[in-house]
Length: 188
Image (cartoon, rainbow, N blue to C red; front, side, top):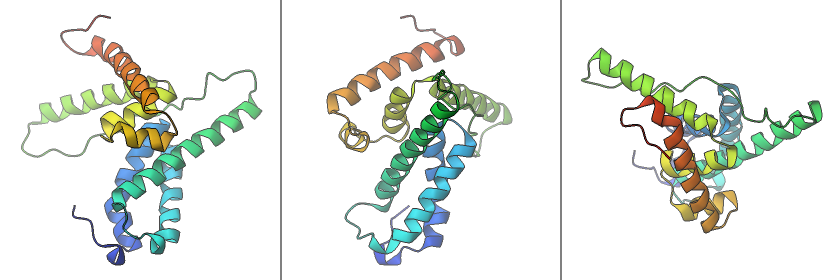
């Protein structure tokens, strides 16, 4: 999509064009649909309130991405604090559990290919959900959203070396988690 100039941005356009992407980022970072829906709603409300302040210094997609990541991290922190108060002896349940995200409809492929792709996507989503949060955040931003490491470091308040280290460790864990599901199993 070619981005409209800032003066042409409307709340309707933002909802229509960017809400699915906002939801997908939040879903991958938070690990469940309900939290992702809450964050998506919060982000869209923030954007509507502040849309007139968007000057176009960055692309709207970059701005929305940053707002979404910040909102997801804040939501996760609130959830962790709430769980600590409710159940102070257990920190093991901080990762949410949720279903897999289904991929969009593909064109010109047979039904067996669509089923296999959906199954594969489900396996990958479940593996992402199993990553510890610090690794998951970096992995989603780097390998799913394809952001540069420098931007990830800035978003998450990490050094570039920390981002690279976490990304490397996340990829190793993903390899181990996915190996049993695919041919040519990788051994550590």
